Image (cartoon, rainbow, N blue to C red):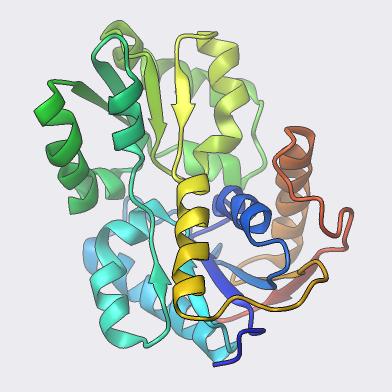
Amino acid sequence: MSSNAPIGVFDSGVGGLSVLAELRRALPHEDFVYLADTAHVPYGARPDDEIRDLTDRAVTALHAQGVKAVVNACNTSSAFSLSHLRSRFEIPIIGLVPAVKPAVQATKTGVVGVLATPGTMRGTLLSDVIREWAEPAGVQVVRAVSTELVPLVEAGQVGSVRVREVLRETLAPVAEAGADWLVLGCTHYPFLAGDIRAVYGDTFTFVDSGAAVARHTRNVLEQAKLLTQREKGGAVRYLVSGDVEAARRVIATLSAQREQNGTNPTTAPQEPLRIEPIST
């Protein structure tokens, strides 16, 4: 495997762009292929076996693109598919774990919230990290779930009245319980940070898995001697299984939002979006 091969990044839709931004910051010279399975988003309410099958098909498609590793930038998919994927593919497969540990270590009230999809809530990863970190520390974890938020982000509705209505209702039990930290347990949710602040002010400090998975990806590639030796800035190709033009608009909007928030890397600013259709 060439060290100059791209890194694959997969999500059920555009939420993984929040992880991609962190990856590009940590690995500015690497090329990436981002696959958004928008034909099947959202994954959260789908049966477990279907989530595993869709993930397998997406990673197979990325493998066919010649990637040297895959970052499964979808919390729901990671909750059900990592062991299966690692048994199927010889390249490194990196997944997401809900960022409960840093929230537990930082809370002052002894209560933290987790905002996630139904699939992530059903999976074992979240329960495992709560059992490992929150329970021994005596920290209460309040779970909040929504089936609406991912489709709203996918539809480009960040900042809308409906998004804020859903957030107000979904997070009310978390705020009432006294949580001071909120784990954003879906890669779509960092894009809603401004909306959460608009509804709840400074009630919560946010944490997600993006920066941690980017650091882990760099370490995995370094240990495998797969870091590129190029010195120029890397580029991104986007593969979309659904409506390409609809995805183009949302990707452009969310990427611009990350840039305004100072989270985009400085390599290749204003680069044109290279978006191609793909069947998974």
